[in-house]
Image (cartoon, rainbow, N blue to C red; front, top):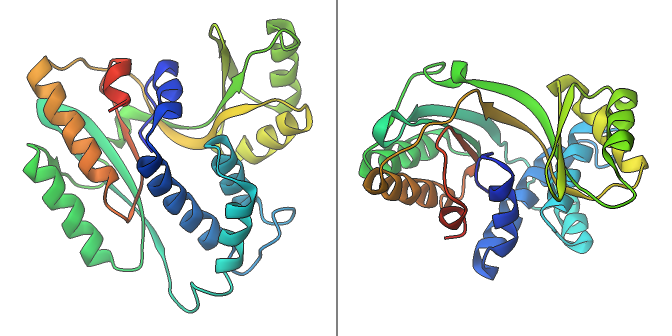
Amino acid sequence: MSGHSKWHNIQAKKGKTDAARGAMFTKLGREIAVAAKGNPNPETNSKLADAIAKAKANNMPNDTIKRSIAKAAGELGDKEYKELTYEGYGVGGAAVIITTLTDNVNRTAGDVRSTMSKCGGQMGNSGCVSYMFDKKGYLAIERTPALDEDTMMEYCLDSGADDYTAQDDAYEVYCAPENFSAVRSYLEGKGVNFFEAAVKMIPQNYITLDPDKQETFVKMLDRLNELDDVQDIYHNVELPEEDDED
């Protein structure tokens, strides 16, 4: 589950290996289970509904989603998970934000710090890079002959979305985080197909690294993604499509 970086990188996610997809489903399943704890009904639990939408956009099977919801009352038990965010830098001054879901804060902080350090990065203080990002609801929607730009604009206005951009085969819709559930629900009702649906940290500007630094940075992203507690990673590095397919 990589950070947002242009539409071609969303497309690249479709080419992930089975092993990478399995790891992604595990993390999405934990997110669903934690959201479902206390209220497993997505109709009255907007956080759960958003987590399910995110999972479906990543092609997570319905049976797997149902099992994840069931875990909320079973496997999780009294285990308490905390949502924590870490900020820091990769090589070349790249800004990185890492969101985690953990039942052991010390383990997670140590793993993230060590992984970044081994790849030339460093963990920073809270707020050190987040000012370079905007927190927004983000929905990537399949563009079809029936869904032209005029129709998409109408949907955005009616749903409460702030803006959208049109790509060759997709629309990217943006909204305020607090409006995300309503916008997503409205668009779901219109029968659109989501490639991605989540509240994300989107960089205000992107930077380009030289090839050596870029290789090291991608290695750090891969290793962070391998950590069980890491849910999402956001960064401001412009990566070619082939790097996101590794």
